[in-house]
Length: 198
Image (cartoon, rainbow, N blue to C red; front, side, top):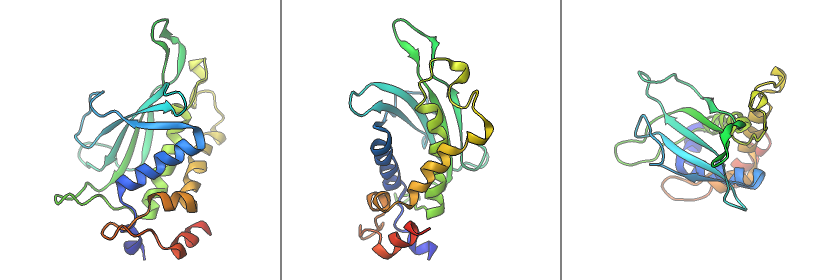
């Protein structure tokens, strides 16, 4: 069952579905900005987060999706690079904007150009990790010492991560990202119903 479902979760489609969800939920647009920042591996991507209505830049993040066992800590995690801060901004550039590093543990694309295929558990982990990073990326607390997770009660730190991972089971979200790798057929409705009932 899991191998059959994996054929519907191509990594590029899942990212597009996730970014579309973030726009629906938070009114932000995730824009690829590869080439705008130094990267440490060809598979690392750089993105900017903008207000969807105005285009105003509000954050940025690096997305390191693929495993490289000898060179990075395995697993799914995120780390802040910097929090939002008016004190550390300048008059000319405005406040210092948040930035984060989001790391996943997906297989690299194969040499034939076949996209990385994910299990639904992988999709859930990606949503969870992005949810955790959103604490930093969408924060505009003017006092940097309490921005992001700083000054936050420990029992509340993971709420955004668990909130966003639930959307990996949402029928609209699944329909937006789950298409068969070879036929481009959508994920069958019984499978969507199964995930929605989870």
